Image (cartoon, rainbow, N blue to C red; front, side, top):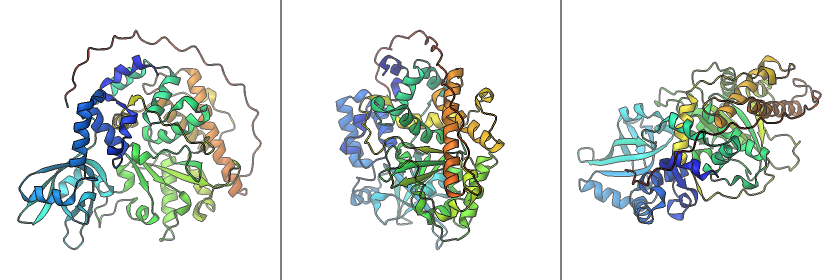
Amino acid sequence: MNNRGLHHFRENIVQKATAREPEFRHLPLFVTEYLLAKFAPRGDKRKLERLKTFVQRHCTESTPEEWVWDQAQLGRRLVLVGELTVAVNRRTGRLDGQLSALGDGKLTVPFELADRYPQLFYGAWGTVGIAYHKDRKNLVVEDFVPIQVPGARLDAFLRGRMYFSETRWVDLLLKSLHIDPASLSEEAKHFYLLQLAPLVDGALPMLYRTNQSGSGLLDLANLFPQALQVRHPETLEAGLHRNHLDHLPGMIHTHSVIVLDPLSDFVWTRSHFHTTLLEDLRSAAERGNAADASVALVCRVRSKTRNSRLPLPEWAKSHPDFFRSVVGLAASANDGQPVAPYDGPALALDYLAEMFARLRREPRKVDLDQFLPDSLDLTDEQAVRRLARALLKLVYPAGDYPQDAVARWTRVALQCREALYDEASRHRPDAFPPRAKPAEEPEPQPEAPPAPPAEEPPPAATEPSS
């Protein structure tokens, strides 16, 4: 690791081993790393112990329910850190909120708070201000602030990227995800980056192939607040789109990535819901939808043979539109081998999440024409262009793409598109006849990397404000 380069991100660096200590195990990693960067920068032992005490007292997953009620009824306003979920109470017409530490107890939530943060309908982590209202004889949420990095600037992030080569930057991204890249193949690194791509460029429906244990699969909802893991088909049916009856804003409007894992479990109670989902995937693939959420479709395969068919639900494998709507297929290259965790310094996940969200709103243009084969039809070409652009945005966020990098990451996108066609041929050879493999071209030699900017001396150590 280029530790000299890390000082350009100094206020947003955390020790990854610390974030996995037992005292924080009930918190998502992005929440833990937000707290570490804010209250215990540089791993100061005394500040770290105070933070652990704070977590024990104020984070809802470990706060005793009786203590919360006692403090609130004494007239003390409480500030807790936790996941707040709201729902419309059809009997009263009000919004009920729930924090896990309060058990079945309901909180009253103002509608204006839910309007400001619509992701609360699906659960969102943040600081929650609670007070007891005697007239309602209930706890009322007076304030909610989502986990976010105050004052984070994209231009500073882009300047910091300048001090890393492509290889070291990719390694830094992996280390920030708690993954030690030292023993990973290039193919394995690509699989991780392909899972991050929908976070920086919208509307990228992707298929991901892994084994039963999920080797190489990122727990995106644990790493990034803009990712949502859906575990039940009914949840997706009820919440994918705006529901005016329950004031649900729709997952596709509140999150960047919606993860369906495993896809084979998603069989709908409404027989035609898959048609709606296919239409959404297709409109996303064509970049015509109003929301730009991506759907990550995870397939867990029992067989160790890489050519075995994916366990797709009937609605997916029987509809050619399914394969036409997905951008690409990425396969895990870990073969069941556990990945070593990374323990050293790297970017805080909440900071990385904020930078990815900013990059998602930044348009990037890249010329791929000379790297695309003439045999691609229009649909294939559009998919490859969008996937390659997302990968390049991850690796070269400022848009300063060297030509050899454009060729390299375009080739990764082409491989994903070809893998998707091969999978479609296994399920629907009538609609996707097997095609001859093109002769492989020799891989271009990478250009010499440009000299990095003159290294600035590390600043004198100062105590950052919390």
